[in-house]
Image (cartoon, rainbow, N blue to C red; front, side):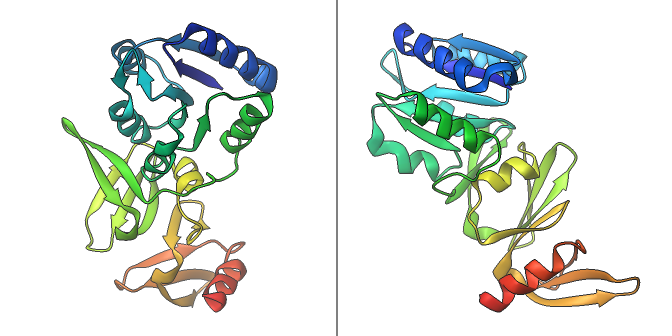
Length: 232
């Protein structure tokens, strides 16, 4: 795992480095520390990371603009801050976790567990999406389904528009609400968008959405999808 810590208090940064090293062990590929926003932005423009641990208040600067930018990128973001009143604001745009200061090893371990496959404790209300020269905020309620597009994902909105997100389908699943279901290796759908399941020739299955669009359902997932629909 490639980790970037953005924290202006050296004592806290060193403590976080030590705890992450203890918890992740050999899973750490690289661990870097930046103490200022501009330094972090430059590092992120030149290096690939899997997760950023980001303080909200850096040398008196509000790090929330970097939170929005980070949440729109391919990696996961974990906010670390004494300003716990801003936790929900951070979760709402798709950060994976929010760790209040002070923190201990078990809290870092819980965050690492989320990084290694568990969903965020508070799902995103909106997703931050990078556009030319700006960050757009897309309400999750506007998304009908998401499809894989190589290393990226395409958010297909209810109005038919498509927005490209830098995160992979796997990473988006970590922050999306539980009503979004992985129905195929390349598709995640909002379960209440499905109006019918069709059986095709060769025991292939597809979901018919409220928009009329048809998307595939994996054979190993069809029974679970039917159960979700029956329960909804």
